[in-house]
Length: 65
Image (cartoon, rainbow, N blue to C red):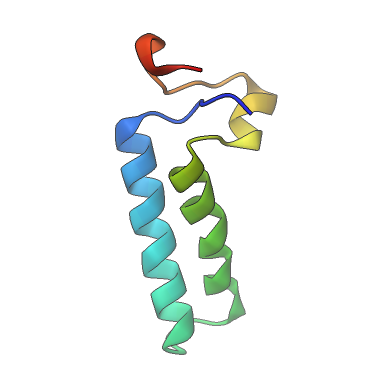
């Protein structure tokens, strides 16, 4: 997959994913907190399938693969 998630977007996804997973692990939120795995993985790998379907790309031109 091509990289389509830019720097700030990646950082926000990773932080959101970690927060949701931590809240789920501490039983603060329900099972839906484990959905934080999705933004975490898309942030780590820099590729979002939904962005690809919608034609969105937040990655700068120079760092695209």
